[in-house]
Amino acid sequence: MNTIYTKYICIVLLSIAAIACNNNEEGHGHSHNENAESHDEMTEANHEEGEVVHFSEEQFNALSMKVDTLPLRNVSSFVETNGQLEVPPQNEATVTAVIGANINSIKVIEGDHVKKGQVLATVSHPDLIRLQTDYNSSWNELQYLEQEYNRQKRLYEEEIGSGKEFQKTKSEYNSKKALVSGLEAQMKLLGISPTQVQNGIINEMVSIKTPIDGFIRLVEIKTGQYVSPQKELFEIVNLEHIHADFMVFEKDVAKIKEGQKIRFQVQSADEELEATVYSVGKNFEENPKAVHIHAEIEKKEGVLLPGMYVRGKILTGTDSMVYALPESAIVNEGNKNYIFSATKQQDEWEFTPIEIIEGTKSEQWTEVRLLQTSPSNLKVTWNNAYYLMAEMKKGEAEHEH
Image (cartoon, rainbow, N blue to C red; front, side, top):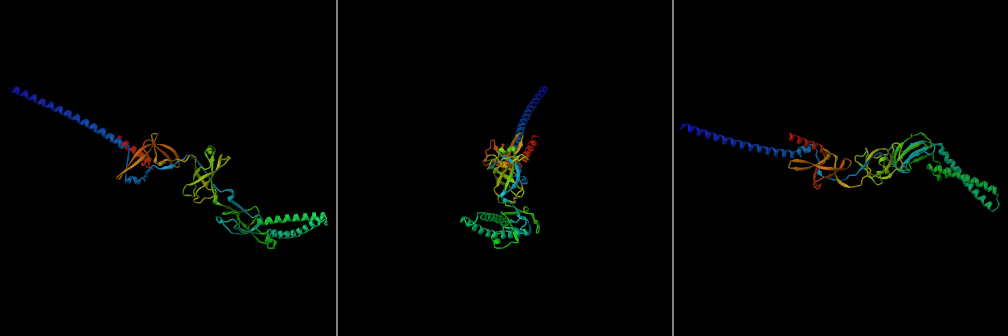
């Protein structure tokens, strides 16, 4: 009886143990599956999180991030060029004394603005006085010869006087007339009035005047100095028609046409200036082998002086408005180019990469062609693209680890 009871107890215990074991195995299996699914979800979430970059408002401000819509901009192909500022030949003048004389006084200094006909200096010399006295004497002789010529002519025509006497008087009259005309021309070059000299008024000093409006660029004389007729006393330049003279190399000449715009810089101006091509040279310089391009400056700002070095870009492409961003807004990653869209929720910024195709580049701006996203109302970053890409790659590496 005891034996049968003992066997029964053992069977019951074994059954309970088997049931418990099965329940335990099923429980472990269910937990494993749930953990695997949870791990997969976290991995997917981490992967998605690695495709964006999050900034706090403090990080955004610290990096001076700029966010705005995609701007439309005139982006054109260009030819780089350099040269210098010039003025047309008719806007420059060199003043000489015309006659050998001594500098009596100097009325201007370098940098002064002068008007056409303004006195720059005065000169004096015995030759100036001699010129006037010679003219006065010759002019009075001419008056006598003219009367004698007319008298001999009348007698000759009336067949009273001899032809020989008439011819002699005519020769003397014409010679004296030519001499007086020559002396008169010299005095006009010196600014001396022939009428005053005819009336016996002799000028001891003669004024040297400017032939054009402009600025005194150079003064090359001193008071009391003797100057020869060909000596350069002053240089004057009129800046009203100052223009840019660029040099374009042979390989780029075919791209240049009249009417094209040039954006250029000069150290004396704070901002970039613009000019328009109005003349393309027809011959090559030997060294370097290039052609001169003359361009009219549209808005003359800052100090612009002949001889100043300029560097610019001739816009050779057709004018068109395209979406464009600064170079710092674009990053290259794995042979692809990206920009970053920007959204803000409360105090957090989110930046997402958008693949683009680069177009024409001009002056630190690049044409941006979107592959899928519509540009309307799209907010993008204008700078720090390389930093954002580095932060995104760093986030992906951390999630993979």
